[in-house]
Length: 420
Image (tube, rainbow, N blue to C red; front, side):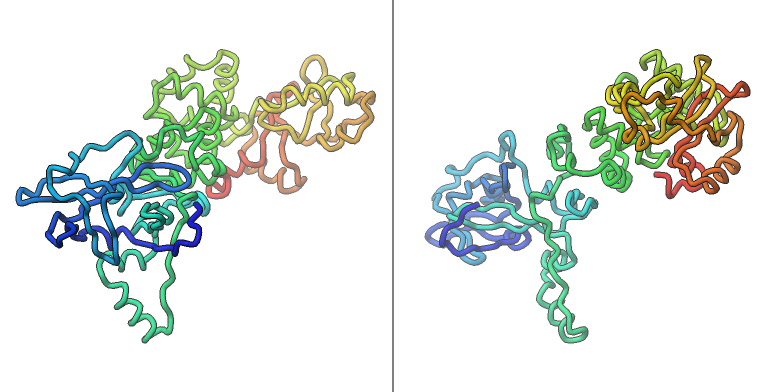
């Protein structure tokens, strides 16, 4: 915002609320109850004052452009109450006190849920713009009229003055209502957050607000966020969703995560979601659900890369480029015979440096560490620790490859606080 040579004047909502408005002759007009702002980029702009006016103490709107502000005095150019507007908000307008004070917002820069104690405005050319949200203790003291006393006490006893804690408006995502959330989060400031950060924020909110946010996410973001969320919160979110939308989200999750979630849901809800899912994905998930959670079969994912030994490095890379996006794990690839029996493995790095015409049979390491479908989590953990690998293949009694256990999935069982 360009202000030219005009001096910058900052105002606080707490200092404006309760202020008296007078007319040009000094007669009382009303008392300020709230400010109306139009949500705009880069900063919301104040459009009206909400006043309590007249003996009947009715509410009216007075355009900000009709007001002259000097210090804490507000002088209205309108002369009669008949000139004031009925308090009807237009689309894109909101009441700032009602929408923000004591409400939760997301600081998208710090990826935290914060409580709003005050709003700071910048006055320029008689326009008033919201520029900062105050989330600090100082803002709370300002609201109750104790800011100066707090400064004196802090300076006298501790030689310290608590700093302001402002969040620039560009990093603020309101959460007070679906209207403020704008419901299209893919275009909102929450889209800037990593799924793990968004999951933390959702977990910090009450069940109503977290549901509103989650339902507004696009399918891919919802799936990524759900994978990072505490299992109990996962269940509560999916239980609140329609079956069709829930199935779309779960289809985007890794197979192992999807199976874990469906296993925690009430059976009726899980069955309905499985019926709605694509048949092939649903069958893979059912396979994982058939195994106990603490055994290899319940920890594995069936989404991995495998090739026959005659496939060349170049051919394998072509397949990976096409399919890697839908794979749960791509760091290792496995070599199997025509009956899916495990023969060897290699890392993606080894594949990348190999000559394109080299067959995988010449590149694979046949010394593969694997576990059986019923292997217990403790033995699996020992293998990860002993061999320093990122994933373990799971085979049946005929050595046919059935899945892969990623280290992250093991952590979610043996150390839940680290796995998410």
